[in-house]
Image (cartoon, rainbow, N blue to C red; front, top):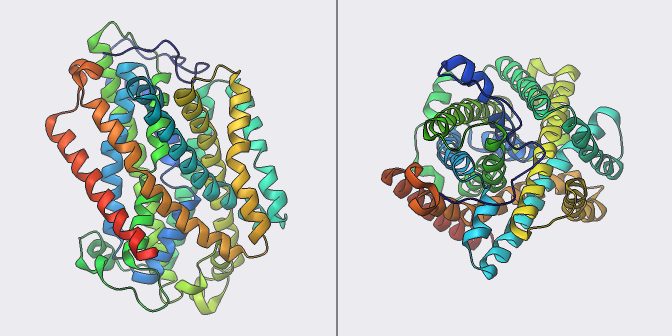
Length: 444
């Protein structure tokens, strides 16, 4: 198994004690947490437009895509978490350690662009939520999101478990709000269960005035299976203190990391399903009228769209959920920016400088977009859809190195992937790559 001299996110690495026994519930409680921060990336503001518009355009038929994306996510996140625990390297460090210099820098550039696309969704989502709730101008609200970095620096002083608890609370808030909204919308249970079954309509020509199902489906994949989460999980899985000289302890850590990851990603699957179901049950036939966050906000209090349940309370709940999602995502996005920059570039600056620097660097394109389109919120939201499509295109550049590394005995020792898992991973990566090439031809 490989080793690496610089640890990932050193201030929290191996910082949380774990029980020295095999008691299931005690261990599960100790290992629960990193999965919550990973799950955040699967329900960030970028998902919202794509999923709700998908439901409003094609009813429940894209639920199958959310299901498949969530299963793929569970497989890949388990590999990422295992890589971190076994090698004591995050994915950026491991890739840089085993790749030639030209490939390392090429992958870093692609990942930085992917992080910018992620930030575009997260920052604009938070800014629009602040604008809707408090009437703060979009540009000012975007600048306020820089304060998230300092909030994160402050929270780090109180221990990483506190951050995990805050993130989990915000996730449950989002889940509660959307469960309530969907319950009020009275969805078709038959339509929901039918939507989880595969359909050939994915490749049909789009309806007039709508995005194609394939474009929305790949947007959902890009929003659900996100490249930066693989890097994040490979680092956060190392926050639990284990004895790396004891193979049994490593095996136990991998087992409970998998429990944590799958439980939290199941919550993300439910939230993403609720988003699409809300679009299908409440906004079907009004896709062009809810393609922006402010339009959704207004639609929830418009009886001609939302029907008898329309009210300002629903709009406020929606904006609060959007703010919670944006805040969660900016915390995890900042951590990932640090992981990627430190891992690929081997930077030796103080971590707070790297964290602030990567955050400002990632915000630059968002600021440019806001200056150019600041008074056209629908245009900003349309850019979110295409940012998720870009993430889907960038995804194979993270998946292939991950699968390669976790299938190598020289890297993972006895903890290599099962052969079927490796083959399945490569098949998924190849299919995604082919679909992405088709998408590029369709768009351009």
